[in-house]
Amino acid sequence: MGRPMKDSGVEWIGEIPEQWETIKGKYLYSVKKGKLPNLYSSNINGDYLPYLSMEYQRSGGNPKEYASKKDGLMVNAGDITVLWDGSNAGEFFKSREGILSSTVALIKTNALVESDYMYFSLKASEEDLKTKNTGMGIPHVNGNELKNNFYPMPPIEKQKEIVNKLTEKTLHIDSFIEKTKASIDAFKRYKQALITETVTKGLTPDVPMKDSGIEWIGMIPEYWESLRIKYASYLKGRIGWQGLTSEEYQDEGPYLITGKDFDKGRVNWETCTHITEERFDEAPDIHVKNGDLLITKDGTIGKVALISDLDEKASLNSGVLLIRKTKYFYDEKYLYYVLLSDVFWKWFNLIKSPNSTILHLYQNDFKDFSYPLPNISEQQQIVAFLDEKTAHIDNLIQNKQAMIEKLEAYKKSLIYEYVTGKKEVE
Image (cartoon, rainbow, N blue to C red; front, side, top):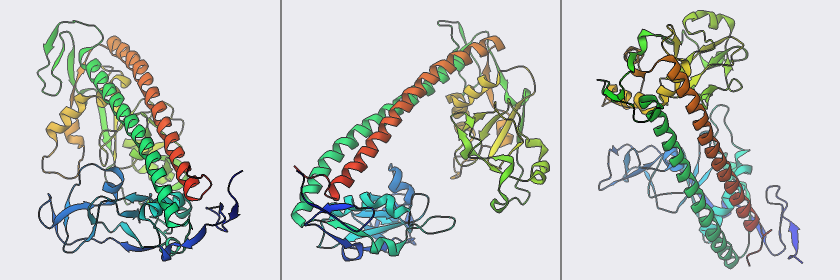
């Protein structure tokens, strides 16, 4: 028999042990928003600490900038923070030491609750709180809901027992997730290396090689050539927006393709927005056709998609460049793989401005991009080989990503079960 339970009266909590109570957040913690410091530095020194932006809190890695302790909100390692604005508003994190940005808030607990128990309780309530976010365009945490949200509250000693159990279990799960992510990264590196090796060396082992004479290509089979993209391709991007704004986007009409719609080398038509026929007709140079290659030139540079299943009208936003074959020198799918390879990235890193903080692929530069060129028959053999090999790698990656999703869901379930008392600490 389990221990006696009662209805908490709170929808997201459900039943809790009879001797537990529920308490509003405002009696357990205070909430303080970060702010924009006045003083920044490019590295850590003296009064400067890592600037904890929303992106840095979520993704980790090295901070891009440092902010002054004199005029920012300083937080300690282990403090509870919540993303206040943006698509992930309402997500809770254990912070690093640093200066909190204006898009993140500090949750400071009091003596009524064990800090780590509060963190786990907030994580358990995360999905419920996110449904109460405000904001028409950019979501924001609803501060009143955060203060007035109820949490299950056992005695302090029981809180500590729950924290010890959850810390042990989540550390084990997180360790497995990190190993799985490392495995995914290794598969991605292998895929990149395989593509690069194949589009520069071909499929015949020990073939005689020659120097291509091009820095970013290096050695290629002696019977291959190289080709500048402008000699066999039409390149075109949207010139400005002709006044087009997001308010004009529609639920029907010609597709407007953005880089966000690229999905595994194709365009996901379901995520595309739409524009009017008039807006579509304004830019005939970028009317998209089957067989076209697309590459992102702003934001996330170098995402590539090959159009093969288009049965309606489509145009491009200003962040995407169209590549259309004009001469039968190359197979479109072969060039697709070239653009995914290190050949493209070595070239781009050579021509990009060393002082630019905003990356951009300029059409005027890209027209002179040279790439290795075997004959059409060998290109098609390379495509068939890479299609098979990369599909197998992608399947392995997908399986591991599915495993991570299951582990994340299991972790969420464990946290919920323990902090609401449905699972008892043994």
